[in-house]
Length: 406
Image (tube, rainbow, N blue to C red):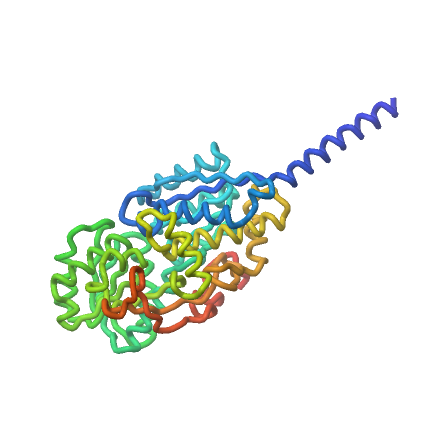
C-alpha cells in the first residue's frame, strides 16, 4: 500500500513539475494597440502605431526563437467607456497581455485602472497627462514618451524666459488639456509669468474663431494651445487667418508632432516652438529607423513621438520577457523587472524607468524652420536646446504617486 501511495505521489509530482516547466516556457504574447484609428489623432497614433508595434516584434528577434506574438487593434473613439470595454474584453476573452499607445488622457487614465485590475501590462506613449505617474500611478503601468510636465517645463519655461510673460490658454476640455494648462501655469508662474485669461473648447472643434477673438482681445503675449492633433492644426490655421502672429502675439503649440507640422506647412508653422523627446532626424539611429518606418507607413509619414514610444517600449518589454524565460502573463512581475532593467534603444538612447513608472530620457526644444531653411520633405525642425533626462520629467520628490515611499 505504501509503495502504491509513493508511486502515485511521485507521478503527481512529475505531472506538476512538467506543468510548471511548460508554464515557465510559455512563449506566447498578445499585444493590444488601443488608439484613434480614423479621427483627429489618427495621424499622430492610428494605423502607424500598429506598424510601430509590428516593427518592434520583428526587430526583437523573438519569433525566430519560437515565440508566438500576435497584435490586435481597437479604436476607443475618444470615449473612456469604449476604451474600458475594449480593454476588459481583451483581457477576459482575447487573453491580451499588454496594451500600448492609448491617446486621449481621459481614456488612458480609465484604461490604467482596468490593466491594474486584470494584472496586465500598460505601456502608454499616447496619453499626455502627468497624472498617469503621479496621483493615478499604477504598479502595472509605464509611461514612456512624453507628458504634460515635460511640455510645460520645456516650451512654457523657454517662452517665459524669452519675454513671453503673459499667457492666454485655449484648452481642450478633457483630462489632457486641463493637465497641460495646469502644469504650464505652474511652470510659468515660477518664472514670474502670469495667466491673464483662458477658454475651454470641446474636443474636435472645427471653428476656433470665437476663442481666438477672446485670446486676441486679451493682449496676452503668448496664446498657449493646450490641445493636440486636429484641434491644434485648426487653431493655428485660423490664427494665421486672423493675423494673430503678425499682430504681435506668439502662439505656443504646447503639444506638437511632426505630422501636425506636415499638415500645416512651413509657411504657416515656421517659428513655432515646442518640446519633443524624439525627432526622426536627431542622429544616425533615428534616421535609419525612420527611413524603414516611412517606407511602410500610411501616407509615407515619418514616425511621431508616439510611434517611437510604442516601438521602444515594446522592445524593452520583449527584452525583459526573454530574460525571464517566457511566462508573459504576470503583469506586475514583468513591470517590476522592466523598472529594474536599464533602458537602451536606438530611438531614445539610454535611460531608466522610475519607481512611479515614468520612463525618463532627454527631450528637446525645437523651432519650426522657415521654408527657405528646409532641405527637403520632412526637414522641419531646428534644435534650440537639449533638456537633460533628470530635468525633463517630474522629480520624484515632487511626485504624488502612492507607490513611492515618502
